[in-house]
Length: 540
Image (tube, rainbow, N blue to C red; front, side, top):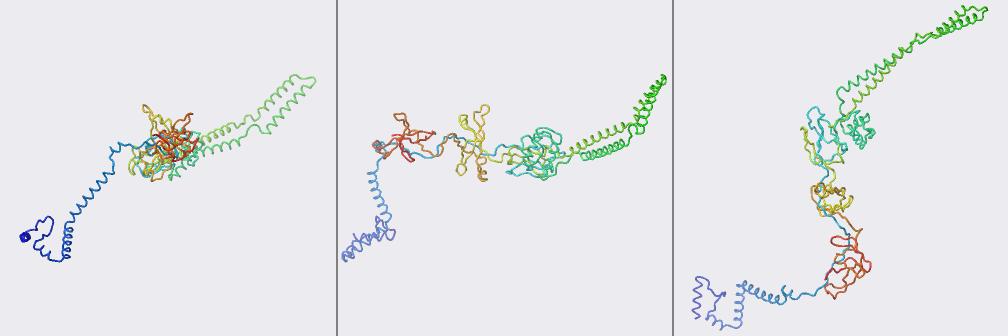
């Protein structure tokens, strides 16, 4: 038999490995006989070597077997100690108290809205180009988007002339020149006074010489020449000055002629006439004193006295300066007219303010949002769109919520990094028509340029406190409050382990409730101690 096995083994070795059920050697009985005749130590060494060879060649098999044994043991242990959900439900734990900790902090009742962050009050800027004789070509001063327009800024340059920004609400609709009157004149005077120029009393609606002088100063500050006077203005001033000079010379000549013209009788002629009257009166007196008196002589001498007195009254009456005085009066009137004409001509030559060279904007400075005007192109339609230079926050709320709010109420909203930022309500406007939602305008506290860039055009959640505590307070849930036998409000504070249920010790603290919010109520202990972190019972 042993020889058969050896031969079988040898035969297999020539062709393929023998299938020995995982063993790599076969003991031949002859080999066993030889091993039996060997020493015992040699036999044990051979068996040990054979076992080691079996383990090394079948390591994976042995590892899998060991893992299976370990899994079996672990399953038995887990099955002994784990409890299934059904088993656990069959034996519920003893009930305990439901508690929550007392909170400490500021408590507020808020109205929450969604708000759009954007620059406020966008306005399309249109420039009146009707006074420009040629095409309204944009020649310069085109602002970049994001630029700010302030008082005295040049918003645009058209046909080489500036469009100067001034504060005001009324759009420019006519050229302002000396003599015109109206609310646009009042607006101009008020606007230039705001930038330090004196155009006269703003309460006076008449555009006078002071206002014209302010126009010249305005253009000088903007770096431009004032508008040229109307055609013929300089010639009119020159002609008026010539007329004034001629009137002055005519008056001087008339006054000289008047001064050299004799008026009335000379002293000699007056004395002669007086002597003639006196002589005639003496002769009459002598004839009247003669005895006998000659009536004819007395009558003739009386006529002579009357004639001498009449001649005395008319001495020099044929010499008068009335024509010369009339000439002086006429020359004076002409001089006055020439002076008035010169004033009018000079006023007409004073600087004017064309409607197309001034842009009134409210709430300066303004931010340029978009620019449609391009340098070198003809201006048609809006030149640009501007808005308030400060970021605004606008939202809406239902009427019931809006009526809880008021101007100057504080609000908060989240910045992109998650931090809260404050804002203030600036205006509340009821809904129009069928809309019942109120518009709420808020002013954010100052923001950095980076924050503005991140926030612009975003929609944020805004919380507006309609009731808030004065500082940090203790607060508990509504469920923690209970009524005492005397109507007092109290809370139950757990002193032991709440899981002990009815066995846990508790104490009652009488409190005064304060501001209530949807989730908690302010409490102040008035009988007993209550502190942050104390566990108050809200249920069993």
